[in-house]
Image 1: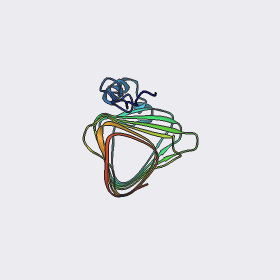
Image 2: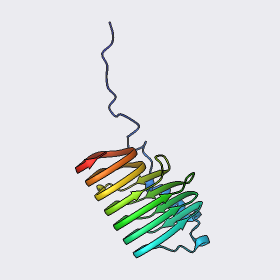
Image 3: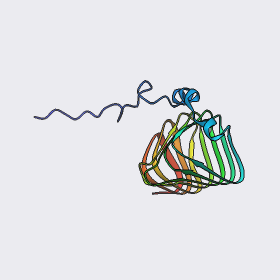
Length: 178
């Protein structure tokens, strides 16, 4: 006869030694950033703000946005955030056709309001290193891409549309997730 099926202990390479150390990736990027080329010392945006990023590696120590923020990605962009990414209001990340965004957040992610991580699925990859719950949305959100948060609970409140992939410790929510 056939041997009984034995499911693996973990569904993937999820052990502590097997996951990407997001904080270490952010620390490495501090020395190789392109911020000075564009004169970008920090991102603390209040009110209505627009930011355009072309191909490069950008390092920031914590990011806070309050109000209406639009970030346009026009090339192969990697953003490294040493600390948290906190957004309150309306945020839109527009990724041009053929462009990509790899967003590394050493800490936690909090999105309150309407958020749109635009582009096609596969153009945006979001890596979260923190263990606090990741609030994908409180309100209405569209996320097209991959969200990697191996130590965190990914949660949502309201209507959340995900076109891509979620990798998290757990998933919870109130409202609808498509």
